[in-house]
Figure 1 (tube, rainbow, N blue to C red):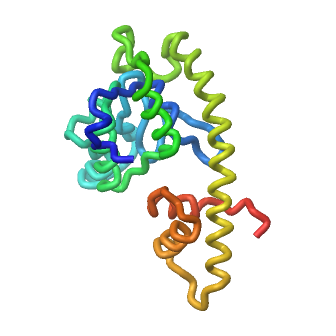
Figure 2 (tube, one colour; figure 1 turned 60 degrees about the vertical axis):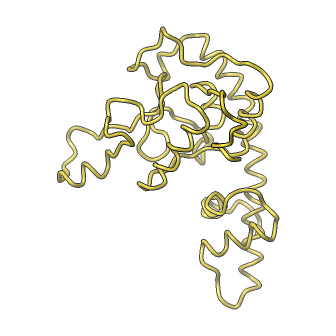
Length: 215
């Protein structure tokens, strides 16, 4: 999906929408205070997670581990609400600095399509302050999140089956080769073999996950 498409102009997504396509870890758990590599999700946006005060680092090391797209670590790296274009800018920046932002691309597509066909309430309300964490959100947000969690659980189970299909195909491709393919090359081969719309980078990440098939 082209997040910069003019067709998506006017669409805004908030906390609840982001939680729909934010991807859980291998155990199926999504911890807003430890999201991806170095982020935390709060009511008003995604923040670069501060380093523990007692960690010993050089100035250069600390700067490298606390990079911020606008150089303002006290502000969200991606504020809620946000447009698809702003999401792409955030994801591009994170990729450039080597930070992982785990999202389900299929779920993101579904969320945006839903926004195109019906108006929805943005999850960030005036009553929420910048310092609120997921645990302190209002009951109305938690109720919505429970419904989203059920939908996400079903979606993740389906995606887990699909990702295993990718890994099985990768294993079969490797077995037929005289020289093992590199991770990037293998992702390209699997994408072509299964005619996948997912990016090669996404496929490569999934192929690196534990293989649950019988082989």
